[in-house]
Image (cartoon, rainbow, N blue to C red):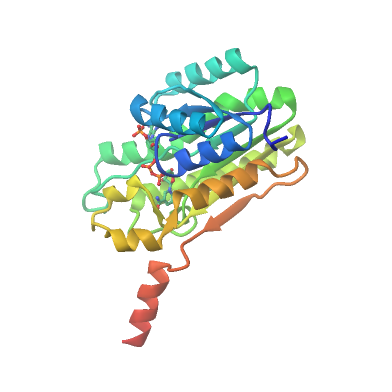
Length: 254
Ligand SMILES: NC(=O)c1ccc[n+]([C@@H]2O[C@H](COP(=O)([O-])OP(=O)(O)OC[C@H]3O[C@@H](n4cnc5c(N)ncnc54)[C@H](OP(=O)(O)O)[C@@H]3O)[C@@H](O)[C@H]2O)c1
């Protein structure tokens, strides 16, 4: 029997990139996967890929920056399945104009709501279901920018992703007594559509050297399959050809 047979996983940002890869990996492991994102089209594509792989999923589209929408989706999960065993709290976004000289209150709000507030809404929505069963795994896609502030990623994104890491650690601090585990996944550069929002365009060759969505999806699957008595609190995953390191080496030579 697959490790996650009978479990229900909610994957946010499941229509593309890391979320799509994680959703497929969890479904192949036997979980029934609820797929959320704002656009229904990409979620339907993920659902079709899961079906082709012999897995089960359901599409529940919605904007996670709206607390009422998150509550509605979570209540739908509870009604349909009576449980949510795994939350992959992965939806996130960035903006092109991310320097302090370019930030506005509105753009800062978008990045903070789209990466941090939305993540908080999802956590508060699933914890009651997990507490009832004294079991649950939360996996949050933070970022290397959630560990080390990054000009490349921008002030608002760095701050929001630091918030996601702090959020995850506090879940373990309070909810460990309820059998609930939380992991902050901090990826470096992963070749996904989010990179199209970089101020400096990234070439196809550069993307090929980066970590791929499937690499992070498989890490998320691994974390979700850990035995209930252990937790990986935080993990970093990076391309071996780390462009930050390579640039530093080049600077050191000159
Ligand atoms: N790629 C990287 O280099 C990298 C590195 C570190 C961390 N990350 C993080 O990894 C996570 C996944 O990103 P990705 O790289 O896989 O990029 P992606 O392909 O752009 O995925 C982001 C997903 O989140 C969904 N989303 C965004 N805002 C949403 C909202 N308000 N409500 C619901 N869904 C929303 C998007 O779908 P809709 O547009 O349809 O809503 C999209 O499918 C993000 O949290 C990102 O910050 C990425």
